[in-house]
Image 1 (tube, rainbow, N blue to C red):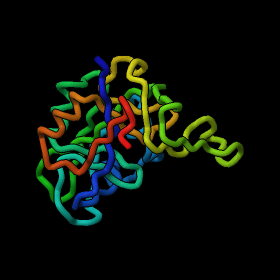
Image 2 (image 1 turned 90 degrees about the vertical axis):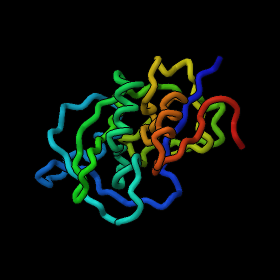
Image 3 (image 1 turned 90 degrees about the horizontal axis):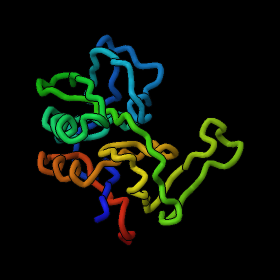
Length: 193
């Protein structure tokens, strides 16, 4: 039986907007994308985030232009229970909120893109952004090969790190928490369109 995986995306639902997490002092990180790179990080210490636009509070969403995954305690519990070897959870205080929240850092990046089954892939043109050579600029109808996920339940894709991918078990558990600011796009099996 094939394992199914899902790309976690920002949902088209009303939600509040949170700024990219910073150090508790307010100092920004030199590399604000670090929480989306798919590798283990040294504990950054106390973190904080501010509400940049009020709206409906959600249990799981992406903060800032970097799309840092942030989840409430119940969301962190899903990852702690079902994917303890695939994520780091860093406490983050959200200004004006008493609920405990966490940055969810996927610590694995796997090479599992099935380019032939994707609807459309766009590569960075040679010479335009040398630091992105060999990576994908964007992928429509993303498809991965589940046999290449190295047993991970949560991961980033090596050449397309914008995609946070979770197993069906994780997806179902997150949906069980409810009030999500994210949606799930299946990236395994036949194309959906």
